[in-house]
Length: 114
Length: 118
Image (tube, rainbow over all chains, first blue to last red):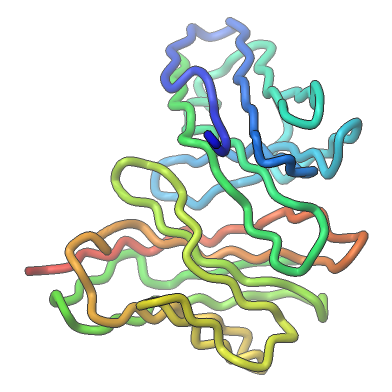
């Protein structure tokens, strides 16, 4: 049981390049999330998927797109990377029902945009 | 607007002593959940403890307890008998909604860095 996995762990891009961050969970969770964490700050929600087939914007969606490929996988795409997108990206998953809705996080992807 | 405030950027505590990390929140929802996560220097996010807005008892998980004061909108984390391995960043987070409206979105505070001194 790997939990939440993310690839890659590290990535360096040049301004204007595109890339896709991959996330997968093996806990049969309905909901999945993408967050970014900037230095000295808490996590901010980029996009989320409450259930398979649905996606919604979070607090900071500009410059990103997402795809909920199936129940297990939720990818985040940067179409034209900018230095402001230099950050650590976390994927998370949770059950969408029940009051105790703990989110399980992946190990993160450290992205640098030059 | 929903908001989490952690006013202590950094804290020090002596090993084996207790420490309280502050968290206040703002929400207009009656149903919500409060979470604490630990982020060690390795970077992963580790779930510590949860408190539901309707829970009458303060949550406890081993050495972690949550001092929940609903009227004051505070949810402070208490770590008893601090250990060197407790040195990390700690985040308070809130989830709103209940039942079918619960999408599980979390709003995070800015975090508190805790350093445990030997």
